[in-house]
Length: 193
Image (cartoon, rainbow, N blue to C red; front, side, top):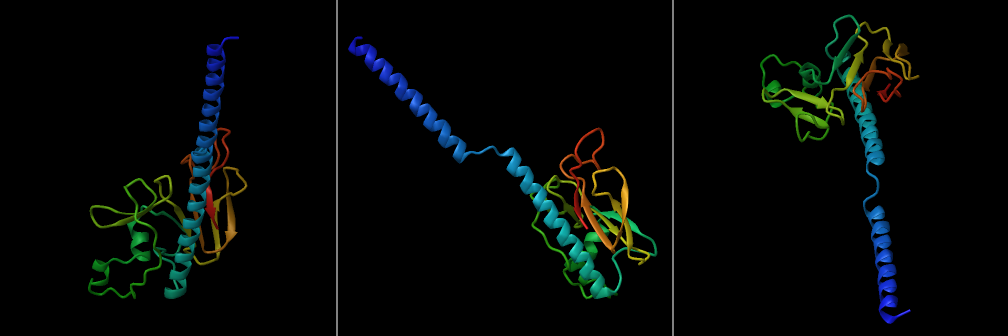
């Protein structure tokens, strides 16, 4: 074997070694981002849902009534400015004559970067809406007749509803944006009840 052939073989193995090293280091520095990111979003949705539920329960403890209810159970989403107004009073509400509430801030979350990103988004008219990590609303079941029974989506991954003892249930449709599994898909809804 000639000296030039040996140099070429050494150069080839050297380049293969460098390519493997770059590939290995790249996999450490830039791991697969789809699975961890989806788990992070689901955990964020669970945490925000639990905080929202807690905020509504604290509202009840303070005012001895649930927000928005008028004698019957009610489902409302967090794109409803009425619910968010009750939980996050704005300065204009506090300055309104005949505003009888104590204007307590019951809920806070990060500011959304856009109308369809996670967090609280202030619309052009000044109203607020809360988005889940996929840019959609959370849904809230309020026990308006105060019998401590609410009907919420079934956590057993069926497309049914279940009765729970409680006054507040919060859920998000999850990554697929659909309630329940449907069409043979896994149920990816996020529940806080």
